[in-house]
Length: 316
Length: 182
View 1: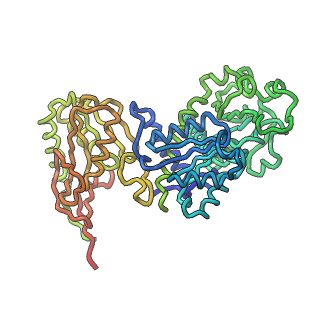
View 2 (view 1 turned 45 degrees about the vertical axis):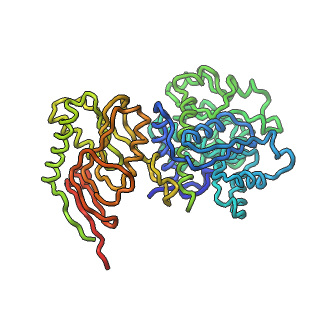
View 3 (view 1 turned 90 degrees about the horizontal axis):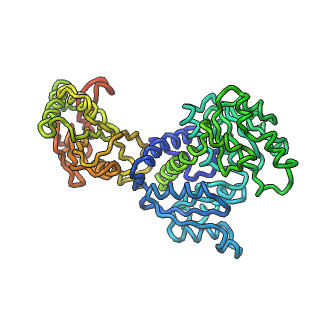
């Protein structure tokens, strides 16, 4: 019987190719379900999920919440603002207190890289909390596994297969957790990956992951089949990494004019939120080659698959 | 493991024909009736029944769907590993239709309970009937019974009934496996 090799989803790095394929094939069945008139199945009716968001989120939070509801789970939502975190409570104490209310799974977004792995390791030490399963919904600049899985699923749906596809990740690679998870996921599935952006926004040793590095947008677009555009993460930048937004948009913004010079179709992706007119112009974001809203739809199916497959492993 | 042939290929196909004629007796031209095969192994029977009915009645528009019940099972998180789902393909609504659920073996009745739950996502049927090739008489755990039965088998829990298909295993037959006591 096929099942995931892990009890927690802390990142793509420690998943096997079989894990990724199992999640994506399960997501396909959930996509059929969320397109039915009645979109709910009873699988997680005896499971309680806590969504712990220590950082802002629209898409991921709503997507997880709707995925949990479609699976009939009971859910509780927590956001750090207005909570006891501001009174000095530690992450492990917060988690232990929530788990004491008989919660089975934790979906967590946190500003610090490694927070999900840390929490999974710490909770093992507490007998009353050891049963809990952790799903990483983004930890600082480290990983965002469900985003990478939904991106891979969206490429599969739009291009048929990932093996041999050339995928460019363009923009603020340095501060992006989406970039790292995408690199791991796409490489496991046999895609070629290139990162493109200004030298200041590309981590120094990223080529050691086996990705190509480019600082020229047109060259990258000519090379790739799929372009995943990333937002500039100003909230994580303490320094100025480029002279002005206008200059960034001029060199690295995706415009219709640039796409027209290529003479080939490219699938355009964006994990959101979009800064229209900076990394991507409106006419590109809303064009027929853009699968940005399909990504959002697929996000629910992929998160349902992750929740379902992990919840089924609670005893082992 | 002892094996016993319950239905050979000839008998198997006579039984399928009988089931088809029984369906025609009750559903005539199948104007308001849909066939739903239950994944994973009920779909072979439903495809065969659908094909044979099409030949006998001579109309090609008998509606036929396949239903996966994985997410509606009652043993999720009670078994070691979660089951991997199969596809559901029902591209019509079943509101006010007569539904014939089709599965190969009726055993505990739990699959059919899940199927009854799962089918409601596609509308409120006028009525639901159950067709099975093999009815295992003992070990029912829920009050479920079939309306159309190919053959009834007295089998105890340790025995296994396997329906094999020409398309899958190379031969149409039903085999009863009995573990040998050591």
